[in-house]
Image 1: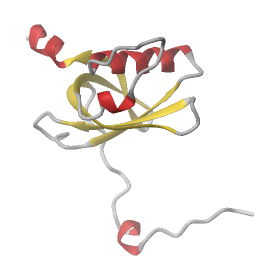
Image 2 (image 1 turned 180 degrees about the vertical axis):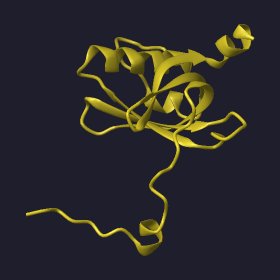
Image 3 (image 1 turned 45 degrees about the vertical axis):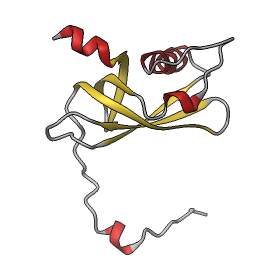
Image 4 (image 1 turned 30 degrees about the vertical axis):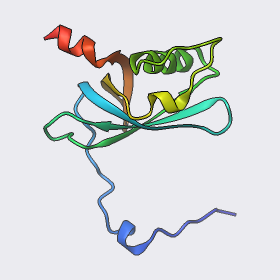
Length: 125
């Protein structure tokens, strides 16, 4: 049997073809970090740069059971200024912090594939 969910009327009328932000480097604020099962971490970002992508939100899932997922999440934490102690990180420390993230497209998704401190972006200019 199919599991159906009825969207609220105001949501059913919205355009689902929301354009992705262009690939490139963006200043991102980490809005929230959650980890429900201990293996998948969901990070919500907000794009701070001016332009067509301004104030857009990104949602990135990091699978800590994989080497790339673990490496990228650790990179995110370090870019936000968190220090890993005995391989643990306090998620509240990175919430609200700004980082520079490189966005690339993979299919219908915009993925953050590189994380750096904001200071690195200033040094690149």
